Image: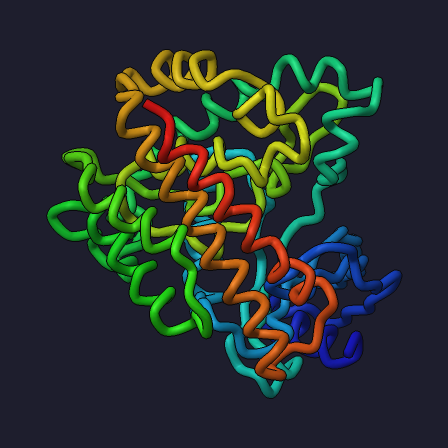
Length: 333
């Protein structure tokens, strides 16, 4: 694998010699493989070593994503000075490494949420990150998709909220093999409360704790842009508040780190746009429903034999958690 990768990098970058060292599979990556490596590159008598990450599809998944789309969105975010890894080379030819992949900069830091929420060395990060994340999110929502040739992202339609609800309802009907009454109730609740969505922006699509590289000082990089799309920016705000991303610290709804009100206020200061609490609640309910449908998808990926993975199977067992959270949210006045 490292030999094939070295030949690919040499051809793409015009290097006279490329050698790969310290290549190893990294933990995490339920939807794709993540590999760390050091690439020594030679060109015009100059030698440099880059710390890289390879992200490769492990197999066919139920939720379709595009490696090229994610690569281009990451490139746009980096150019707009959003803290993301710089991307270098992309291949959607499965003959190179057996599946589509791309290579990007490796950013040092931690990603495990439980360490962030519990370890003493991250005490400062816990205080700073809610405002940091709100400010970064406002910057993401200011990215001009047209200016960065992101016109391949489908338009969200007249009402982005309704578009997303219908899209995930279609996925649910296709994926679910047994009844889920709580999901049916959630769809009815959402369809009765669809907010207006006059503001359409680039949406990260998976903006949450767990997709952030952090250090003792706070946020270092935002990861996992494979679900980026055009839509209502409040979708990202609501997704950050989904219960699954609190990792047990439920008294702090924003990623286990802070209160909704403080996160909304920080976003408003950074973006100049007021957050409608009713719209944010709609997107939080939708986010919990969406995560529940994703857990079914992950389980089906394993059960259908596309990717044999204990991690995917265990994620599938979490569907019941989302059903309970949806019932609790819907019962609130």
